[in-house]
Every structure is written in structure tokens, then in C-alpha cells.
Image 1 (cartoon, rainbow, N blue to C red):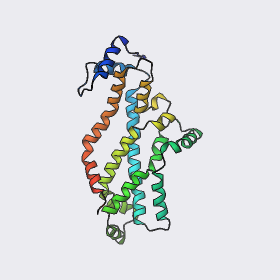
Image 2 (cartoon, rainbow, N blue to C red):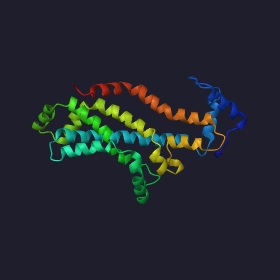
Image 3 (cartoon, helix red, strand yellow):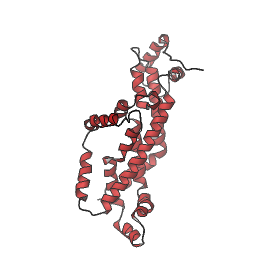
Image 4 (tube, rainbow, N blue to C red):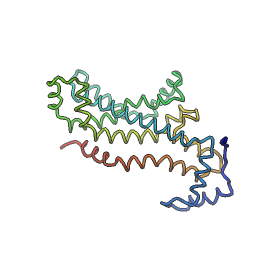
Amino acid sequence: MERRELRPDHRFLKPYNAEIRREFAILPGRAILYNFRNLKALDSIPIFTGLLNSMFVSISVAGLASYFSALTAYGIHMYNFRLRRFAYVFILLLMMVPTQISALGFIKIMYDWRLTDSFIPLIIPSISSPIIFFFMKKYLESNLPFEIVESARIDGASEIRTFHQIVLPIMKPALAVQAIFAFVSSWNNYFIPSLLLKDKSRLTVPILIGLLRSMDDKTDLGMIYMMILIGVIPLILIYLFLSRFIIRGVTFGSVKG
């Protein structure tokens, strides 16, 4: 059966909007199924496709940002090379540059390279994450003795093997907490995706929420908050199941006095 563009029945829209505006309630209201049916029937708002898109982008960003930040932090922490101090300060300076400043040039390059309506601009730049690098560097300073790495080198282990089999297990709490934060940050990202993604099959959850808010003059608050609820549920589940990693990561990553 072909899906059709559904507009909310405004005979019911007004009292439901008034109920939402009246007070905060923990339990769902009586119109939750009505709002979900209306939202699901909107052909211009592919909610399940948006969830899958956000999940794919956020998981990719969390994995790449955590891994390469840990690798960079290990290199700067363990190796004493000529430009080591400059590289460390340069990465810290990048933390102070707001996204909005570099966004114009980045968007122009993506259009020139014809990478719009693609997840590549949302995933690959996450390899460079100064904030995650800084956390990883401080974690290594507190929890990675040089003697462990030196022993592995004496035993003949390669640097790649040492990093993957010795350093990464030590960094598990830090990797977990930064992966969670990177996932949440990517999931909530609206600015860059809204400038690059136009194809309906590529839209993410924050963009779908923005589309709902701009549909017409008679805003259906029920559908908007239903979409927000659908987008928040994965984040709640992640915090519930992985909260122990956040506590351990923050505790173990603190600087020793």
C-alpha cells in the first residue's frame, strides 16, 4: 500500500497542543498513539531511515575518533621527537577554533568534491578530534608507565603490536567514555549535516526534527515531541547500559596529584 502525505487533523490538534503546553508530565499523555500514527504516516519524515542513518554515522564517528585519538596520544606521549612540543600545542590550539569558523570553507570543499548527500564528510573528519586526544593524553600520563612499553620493546614486540595488545587494554575505560561522548555529540549534530544532506534517504534525526518544526503554521507539538522522544531513546539506553564505563573512565583518567 502506498504511503500518503498525512496532515494532522486540526480538530484534535488544538486540545493536544494545549495539553502539552499546560504542564510537565513524566508519563505519556492520552494522545501518544495518535501522534505516533501521524508521524509514521508522514512520507516526508522517514523516521526509521533517519534512526538508521544517525546510528551508522554516530557509531562510525565514535569508533574512529576514539581509536585515532588514542593512537595520536600514544605517539606524542611515548616518542621524543623534535616537533613533539609543537604538535601537542598545535592540537590544543585546534580545540579553541569553533566549528562555525571553519564550516564555510569545509562546506565549499565538500561541494567542489561532490560529497554532498554523503556520510563521508560527517565521518572521516572525526578522525581529528583534539578534545578526545587531550583526554587520552592525560589518561596515558596517569596510567601508562614507560617501563611497560620498554619491556615490550626489549621482548621484540613491534610498536603496532605493543599499542594494540598492551596499551589499548589499559586505555579501555578512557576509550569507552570518549566513545560514548563522541556518539552522543554526533547523534545530536545538526549544523553540518543540515548543510550537506538534502536527499530524504540520507537525513538524520536532528534534521527530521527540524523539518517537523517547519512543516506548516499550525505546528503539531505532539508529533514534534514524539520525534524527539524517538531520537532520545537510544541515548538513554546507552547511558543506562554504559554508565559504569563513564564513571570508571572519568575516575581513572583523573590527573594524579
